[in-house]
Image (tube, rainbow, N blue to C red; front, top):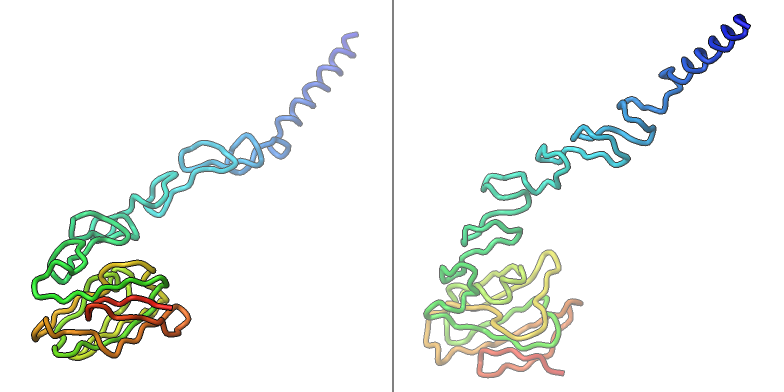
Length: 209
């Protein structure tokens, strides 16, 4: 009887030893209790463990990093001292976030169209163009170039001015503003084709069928 007890005891000990063997234990190299888990930066085991973001923050989303302007990554500081992906800037009149329409001695060109504008070119008679800025053109991200007689706007990236109404662009022009009038207008749609238009009051461009 004693021998049977000894044999049984030895058998149970061997089973326990096998169960505790590290090669058969349901743990992994990160000492987590289950094979499909790993230890995160917070010290906890999980199937989707937390990791440090680009800023070194455990479980962060990278938004807490700061750049040279002390703004989060992908943001910069605007003229209003606030950080944003598209920060406010001073317009041609020195107005933060303005559209250039408040400057004195500016001649505004207005638009009223039912299709997006991909680009335009026009001249102004009886005047010499000094500067062209502001309005929906700048807001949409179009590039503007000008000579003393012509304004040209287009986009390298395919940006467009949405259909609607507003100030297309503001011009600083030398001359008698009572005589200024848009001339030789070319208005392009997103396909590069022409947009039919009418000019009202010498400074308002309206699309027409």
